[in-house]
Length: 178
Image 1 (cartoon, rainbow, N blue to C red):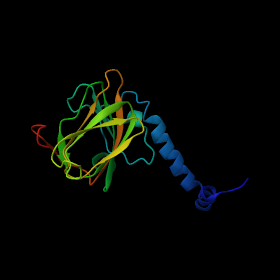
Image 2 (tube, rainbow, N blue to C red):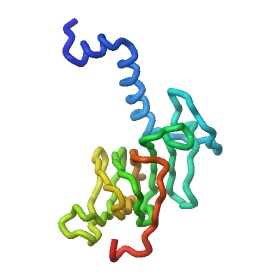
Image 3 (cartoon, one colour):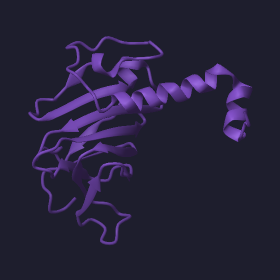
Image 4 (cartoon, rainbow, N blue to C red):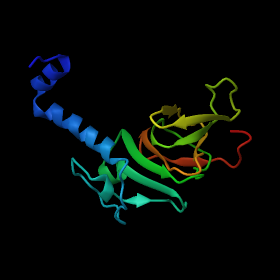
C-alpha cells in the first residue's frame, strides 16, 4: 500500500496521532445526536468524554441548551473553552459582548448573526448576517453580538470555541447602538 504524506506522518507518530484523529471524529459525529445530559457538573479529568453524559444547562432560557464540552471550570482548560449550543426555533441569545475571541461552527440549521463591529463597513451599526449549516464565523474581542435561530421548524446547533476562559459576559441594553 502506498503511503502519502499524511499516512507517513501517522506511521511516524504511531497510534497516538491516529487516535487524536479518531477522537476528533467521534466528537464531531456525536455532536448531532445528543440525549438528555446529567444534572450535575463534576470536574472531569478524563481524556475521552461522552457528550451525552455532560452537564447541560439552559441558563433559564426555554428552548436553549448549553453544554461545556471542554472548559476551564469543569475540565481545567487554561487557553480555550468549547461549547455545544442548541437553539430551538426562534430562540436567541441576548445582545452581549465579552473579552475573548469566539469561533462558531454551525453544525445544523440556519440562523442570523447580529454583529456590531469596528471592522465592518459601517462601524457601530448592527448588521444582520445569515449563517447556515457548515458555515463558520468569528467574533472579535468586545464586539457586541447576538445569535438567533431564524428557522421556524428546525433547531440551530453550533460549536463555539472561545479564548481566555472563564469569560465574563456583558449584556447590552438595546440594539440601536451596539
